[in-house]
Image (cartoon, rainbow, N blue to C red; front, side):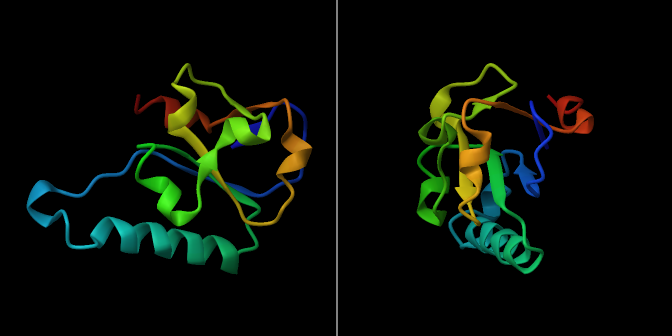
Length: 108
C-alpha cells in the first residue's frame, strides 16, 4: 500500500477474508486476524488497512479510516474501509488517499 505523498509508514493491506461455511463459527477467522496483527507488530508495521465487514473487524481494534481522514482509492462505503493503528503515526496520512498494490486490483 502507498499513500498519495511519499510516506515512510510500513503498512499491511488485507482483503475481505472468509472461512468456508462448514468451518465457520469455530474461531478460525479470529485466529487468522490475531495472527496477522501479531506478525505485524513483530515486523514493526505501522498500520493495517482492511476492506471488510464493518461489524467484524472492530472487535480487533480496527476503526473506520475516516476517523483519521484517510480515503481509499476504491469507491467503497466509508464503514468498510478500516484501519488498525499500531504505531500512532497515522496522523501523517491525514487527508490523503491510500492505494493498494496493483495486484490487489486484479482480484476485484
